[in-house]
Length: 360
Image (cartoon, rainbow, N blue to C red; front, top):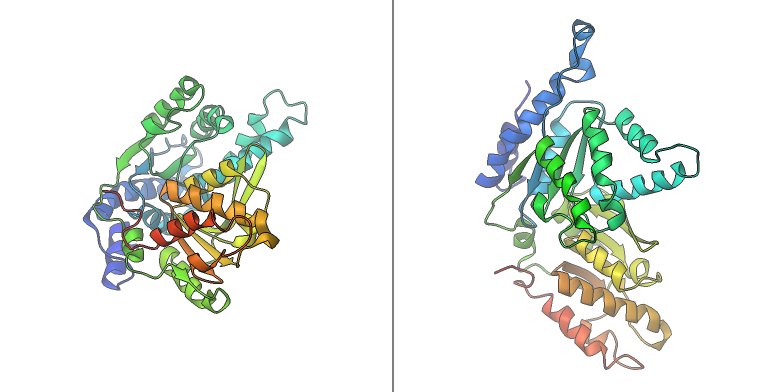
C-alpha cells in the first residue's frame, strides 16, 4: 500500500533512522502535494484515457529554505526517492549550472541564434522533476542566464523543488548588476511555494557536537573517517562537485547532503587560490579533508594553499573534519613558513571545539 511522506518519515523515526522534528514534519504535506501531482500527471498515470485530453497544468514547485543542518537535504532525499515518476533528477545547483555553462560554450560554436535554446531543450526532454540541493547564486555568469533558463523550463512544465540557505530575496545579494537578476526572484515566487524550515536544532551540528573531528595518524584513521561520512550523509559514494571560479575548476571528488570529501593533495596540490577556496567554503557545510602530511620546505606551495584553505573555512564557519600525520601544532615545525603556521594551528585547534561554528 502506498505510504504518504509523513508515514514514511514517522516509520523511519520509529526505527531510529532519524529524529522526529515538528518543523520537518510540518513541511512534508507541501512535498506530498507536489509528489501526488507529479505522479498523477506522469506518463504511466495518463495512459490511453488521457491521450486526447489537454495536458494538465504542472503543480507549483517548492523552495525550501532555512539554516544549515536543519534537515532540508534529508527531506529532499525522502521526497525524491518516494516520487514514482521516470523523468526526475536530483543534482547540486552548482553542478547543474556548470553543466549549463558547458552546454552554452558548445552551443556558441554552432550557428544557433540562441545558445540557451538547445541547453534548455536537453533538460526539458529528459526531466519533468528537477530537484536542487542548495540553490545559491554567486557567479555573475550564472546570474545573467538563470532567469531566461528557468522561464523556458517552467513554460515547458518542468517542476522544480530546491533547498537553500537563503530566502529568495537574498539570492545574489550585493551581486554585480543585481537589478538584472531581480525578475528571476519574482519568477521563483510565481512558480514555486516558498517555505522556511524553522527548526530550532542544527542536526548536523548536533551530530558533530562532542564528536572527534581530528584523526591521527591519517592512514589508520580511514575506517573512522568512513564512519563519519556515513553518519553525516547516510552513506553512499556521493557525487563529484565541480566549481568554476574565474576559469579554474575546483573539484570535490565526493559530495552529498552538504558534506564534501577530498584529500589534501586534491585540494592543496592543485594551483588554487583564495577565490577558489572561498567558493568551496561557500558550497559545502562540512568538509572532510584526508591525508594532511607533515609540512615543510619540501611541500611549501601546498602548505601555503592549506593555510589559505583553512582561513577560508574558518571565516565561512564551515565545519572541518581531518585525518592528518600529526596534531596541528606538530604538522609544520621547521623551515620557512613554520612561524606563520602557528596561527593556522591555533585555528585548527579552535575548529575542533564542540561549540565552534554554532550561531548565537
